[in-house]
Image 1 (cartoon, helix red, strand yellow):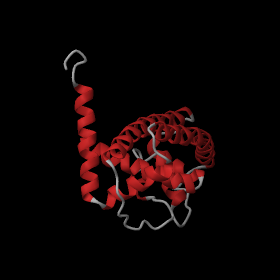
Image 2: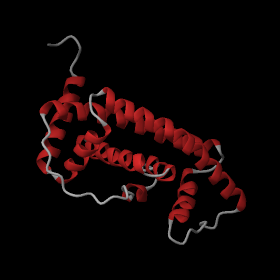
Image 3: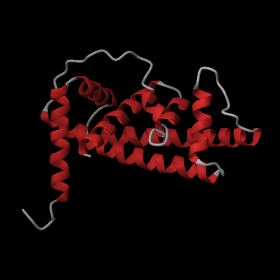
Image 4: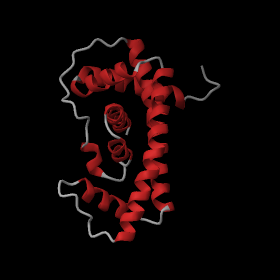
Length: 187
């Protein structure tokens, strides 16, 4: 589970990277990754070149701290997505069907009625409004951890391509989780 969490955090970092240079629509898709498997395939428009970067132990800890905060914000945003879809009177599965059809190269409607399309558009508008606030919170969390957005993204990209760096991040994540699980009174 810990490895999945770190993988999810790295993917979240990449989604954040894509959002910084991408459109609001791209971010909306990324926020729904827990409900929509194809959203995880959407990466930034730029080609990711292998990066050979030096990352200090101090930066590893800063990255892990930031990534954990970003993951929490991501989970909150996913809950807001679900709530927004439900509040508009649409089921998440149906929203995702329409969304996938809209994102396909044919731009289909998945057999959606006009009423469903109106709900879908209302949901997208609301999510786009929420997403800018979520992006800002993520940027703030990264900066509060002591990293710039650019450095955070460099480390995230490099970790996907460098198994040694990924292992260092995983070890730091495990260490942090173990420390959080220890009772407060023990030393």
